[in-house]
Length: 405
Image (cartoon, rainbow, N blue to C red; front, side):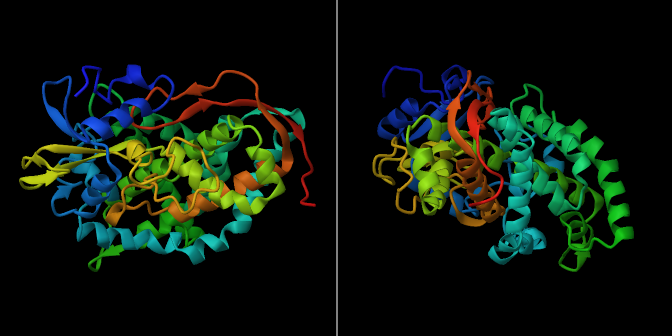
């Protein structure tokens, strides 16, 4: 093992985004690495695509519920609260709860949202198109998925700024030094959610996500208030943050590879491939933790019962054994088996289909309406080793027509 720093959690290595040089070295030299942590404990960092996929599919051996999905069990909210979230559940409990919302995100349901997504993207671009400049993060990548989420929840657009604030605070809690940093956010969400339920019941909004939670049942019993609240909180975050950061990171990658935006504008049939490559390239959620429920083995390395195992999805999505030329941004790559939505198995992202539709329509409208797109300032990254996110992406462009030709 090289003497160079081998701690992927060290924020000093993330100034320019995920440390792919380190990931590459770890895959070659220590694909399952005993990772010392500042508090004197350790976890096992796993860097290979195949190992991450195997862990993800073996929920009996690698638990989300036992120790949580972050290194500190109470990282975002207390563990006894967090275990009401899908992310923290193991089967069969996870299966029962996932069914409550699964119908909202089926391919058929997502296809019915196509016009709504396009209308929202169009309206969002209309707000800045005549200026010939914008911040692709704050002006486009943030409002589109957040607006679609509030729409699906049955919440008026006027509340989008409040959801944005909550999302930002939940993101910050994941890297906060103190545990349960997002607990105050849930305390604020509770009366808001109660008011939304009362309003939507009065208005008969039976198909909204909020009302699906209100009327949802597990084994014949309705969800209690805490279960509804934690579902609501995780959807507020997970329903928009990954899409937002994939959109901005993907657009940055296209800007950094001259000619690709013109190719997409000339041949929109390439856009679905560009979406998949943007997902692989960005892999926004960099890691999640699991806890070994028994003595086991990963990649030939013995893992004792109770040890934490961290899956580095950003590394898995660049694994040489899974992808040809993994460090090349290739919009014509054939069906990349990336890990942007996790390593597969029961915790595969529920909203993957909706995210793909939003990303595709954003690229379709950007390449059609924003010509000669160029960077116009410094790119600001989110200071995080968990989320590969951008804070600002300033650009200039030549405005194009609103109507499709």
